[in-house]
Amino acid sequence: MHLNLLHLGRVPYAEGLAIQQRVVAARKAGVIGDALLLVEHPPVLTLGRNAHRSNVLASDEFLAARGIELHEINRGGDVTYHGPGQLVGYPILDLRGEWPGKKGPHLGPVDYVRMIEDTLIRVCGEFGVMAQRICGLTGVWTLAGGSVPEKKIAAIGVHVSAGVTSHGFALNVTTDLRDFQWIVPCGIADKPVTSLELEAAPGHAPTMDAAMHATARHFGRVFGRQMLWRGSVDELLAASAEKLNTGLHR
Image 1 (tube, rainbow, N blue to C red):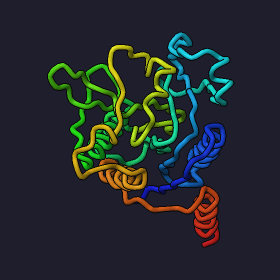
Image 2: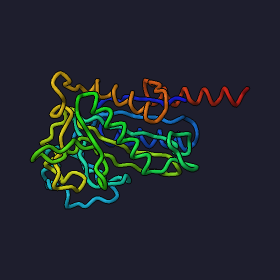
Image 3: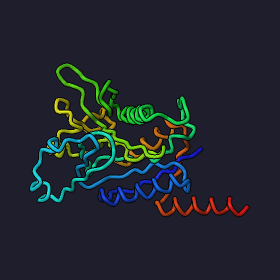
């Protein structure tokens, strides 16, 4: 079985959200198979279903002056930041499919999030970064050492509707971490954020391209799918429609 993979480059958040919604609708209709969208966004803040507006520390005037949008969305979690140098992934999967570790008629949302964490922990390992889960805190974290606490390197916030996932994860690759000063990341005030660039082992300096390929490769391994690159959403929908029509006319 394969999973469609699209690298959309850097797109405004609203445009990326519209693309995501288009693919989700097609997946729910059975027009396409499962997909993973990989993108970068210009600086933007997003508030999940459990967000507290007080966790946005920057004023509306400050954000407006810098052209930084704020979007309230239906994923889980609190407030997060997306920006250049951050690899954002939107898996659009039907959890009722055949997935590794599925214990019932569908892959449970918690198990699904654990699989995303596993994927990103493996990606970090490719750059010499030891990463982990922390019980009770969603996401991926570096290991603590001495007086240095665990630092968050990847955030996760998902939504599931009619068995189909949307939203997903954000991995800090070469992100300017100063931009996180605008918020209390994910509502957690006592743990800092970091990036692959800051944590990578000598000789393992990350690039967005390398992080993208590592993420696609490990996502396929963890979720038990062969990754099939697509050039665009239109190509994905056209190819799927052609396959569907061929099947109907046999």
